[in-house]
Length: 379
Length: 124
Image (cartoon, rainbow over all chains, first blue to last red; front, side, top):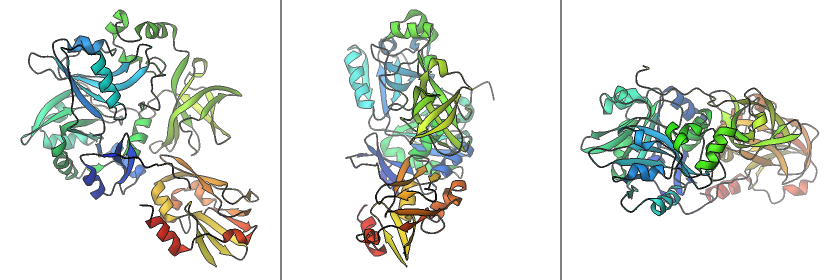
């Protein structure tokens, strides 16, 4: 047995003691001690989230606001979302890009304008948040105000029963906002920012609340029979089934929005008018097609192809796996990989090399497990 | 019959020149739910400290090393169908393989159960 977990000095989450009391095994991740699993185990937690409602502590993620009269235009110079067209209460998945069109981070931006002054709420990855803040500070004009919110916790409630549960705390919330919409409510005298979004492919919410109030909110949610705590392990297997990329693995500065299959994050108006970092290169990729593409791979048996596994077509190496693992829902391994465009068509038979073995792998279009988001007007 | 333990969290039960080998309960708890186990087939020549098999949890794959050198005589085929046997009975029906010990002197220096418990307690 070889243990790969190493000890680094780590910060603690607002819910650190809560996790330990709930039976969590804590591991270092993104600079924090985080719960990888609770006593139920990863597979049970995964299945619970697909069937009921899972509570995730994602307080390691970076929360910040960008505000001021010129906030939308200033952000549009750094990411390819059409913020001028993003109405208050609406959310967009976007990408912080460098001058070469490489992905500095992926994030969700919400228009939280309430009154005259435009304001945007950004949720960025935990491991990249310090770099993101430095990048934003270096590029935003002086009259646009960047405010990191390190005293805010972020909890996610995910699964088909999440809306039912949250509606007991915030009556009407089940139908008031749909997928990728946000609002604010009071829990007693505590303000809570509520986003209908997540990282599991299920319907669900992300809740931003003052860190000092996080334990009370977690306890309130755990008092509901439908809710169980879910660790990072199941968070990863859930997002992989949903085909959602993980920064630092499936995305980094060496990848661009087109090869990663994230071109949807480049809004129509921005495609036409450019003006975001790397626009020339990305426009060429959009028109000519990326030579390397993100695909899904479906494997047989139980042996997984994981990050770093090479992908072959016959004897020719045509790609590599960026994340992979066993899918509890499907009962076989799945993976995300970059492959040469000629081998990226769904149904193509390839091989993933694992410990010297060639495992048959069929190209598929993610998600591997269908998304079940709640979109207003579709219910 | 005697049972020994390694710092790599394998157990080895010795009866004459035959050894039965698996991973410890502590190891399965650390790994979490196992979804795949690869054990060496009969006839495989193993070398002490070298790779003997692989265990995969949802999160990661980990090597299993042979605590002694020898020739594999039998492997636990049930693990292929049901890797969770290792979670439910790591030191019993979740055994990995049996081998004929090449050099009994290699058992010197392995821990007994009390020493292993102390070793694990010191890890936290």
